[in-house]
Structures are given as structure tokens and as C-alpha cells.
Amino acid sequence: MSNTSRDLDTSRPHSARMYDYYLGGKDHFPVDKQAAEAVAEAYPGIFTCARENRAFMHRATRVLAQEHGIRQWLDIGTGIPTEPNVHQVAQSVVPEARVVYADNDPLVLKYAERLMRSTPQGRTTYIEADVNDPDSVLNAPELSDVLDLSRPVALSLNALMHFITDSADPYGIVGRLMAALPSGSALALSHCTPDFDPSTWEKVTAIYTGAGTPVQFRAQKDVARFFEGLDLLDPGVAVGHRWRPTGPAGPETPTDAEVSLWTGVGIKP
Image (cartoon, rainbow, N blue to C red; front, side, top):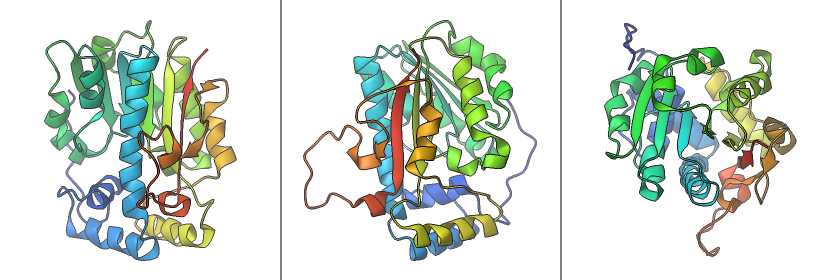
């Protein structure tokens, strides 16, 4: 695991700490709470969106392990650990699963030991790297120490790519990462969208941008572009709670506007 000399910046909100607040965590600061509450005032569904994002990650991980033989995961934009993490879900299905987490936030590094509690049969590690520089992830020695890139790997990008604006070439970044993975690998991706309530998401965009975090929430067709060249699993690019739900819809089922999250899983031919 790499070390960092950077101090935590508690003077302005951070997206990972705001997400921790949405999930009911305690690893955030007053400045993060203030910004997150501003988002929640504009978009009360943000708490539902965050929960459904986690639930999608759990289901996608299980489907890839149970139905597609995936035994290795690369989770980028890990965020502050919230149990169960990817490796706990994967190893509950296949104890020998191996997971590499990557993030560039020093706060995540501080809590990375939570991500290292693997089963005896499996392995996990954490690398400090930035998705804007895919080679910093792919060339990290910790990655090749844990993952065998000659065998299928699931690339997990949960609620990450809306923080990469078009000027930073998000599709090129995902393409570079997937190009390094062999046939049979997978992309599991979730992405917030303004499709169901554009005016609300304009306010959310303004809050994040004003806090120093550029965002670009995308329409379904633009999220689908991330899966070009891959074989999309049914039901395709779907609203988070509609991707392979595990139980029947009930009175507590959220609306698409509350969730406002496109999700999908594709397999590399």
C-alpha cells in the first residue's frame, strides 16, 4: 500500500465524504455535511440514490461471481469503506476472490485497512491512484501482485464517471482500462443522471461545482457509450433499482426520479 504525505483538506467539501453522509456514515466533516444537506434540500432523493447505488454494486458483484465466473475485481473510486465492500460481497460467493481498490483521496487511504480484511483464500489491496491517469492504476505494482491480468477482471466504476467531465475524456479512460483486461472481463458502472428531473439536477450540479468538484451528470444514451464494444447483460442500461432486482416491487419501491441512476454491466467479448 502506498503512503501519502498529503494532509486532509477539511476546508471544502469532498465528494467521497458527502457520499458517506448520504449513506449515514460518520467519516465526514461539518463542511461536507453542509454541502450534502444543500444537495438533499434540492434533491431529497439523494439518500435513495446512494442506497440504490450500493445495492446495485452488491447485485452486480454477485451476478458476475455466480453467473460469469469472475474471480477478480478492480474497484476504482472506492470511496470511504462502507460494509459490505466489494471484496466482502465477492468473497461471500467465492472465498478465493481477489480485489484491488483504487482511490486518490487521502481520507480513503486512512481507512484502507477496512478494505484489507480478506478471507484466507482470497486477497485484497489498496492503491493510491487517479482514474484520470489510467496507467497509474494499471502500472501499480500492487495491482499486478494481486490480480492476474491474463484472466478475467471485473472493472467496477460505481458513481465515479460523473466526476469526469467530457474535457477529461471519460470514454477514453474507460476504454484504456478495459483494453488492458482480457476477454471475459466485465465493466460494472453506475452513473447519476438528470433524465428524470433536469431542473433539480441543474441545482445539484451547481452545488458540486461551487464546492470545487466539477461534475457532469449524463443522459442514458451517454452512459450507454461507456459500454460500446461490450456485450450488455440484461436488462441493459437500467435505472439502478431495476437492474436485476432480487425481490418483487412493493409499496416502498422508489421512483425512477428518486433513484436517478443509470446502471449496467457489460462483458468483454
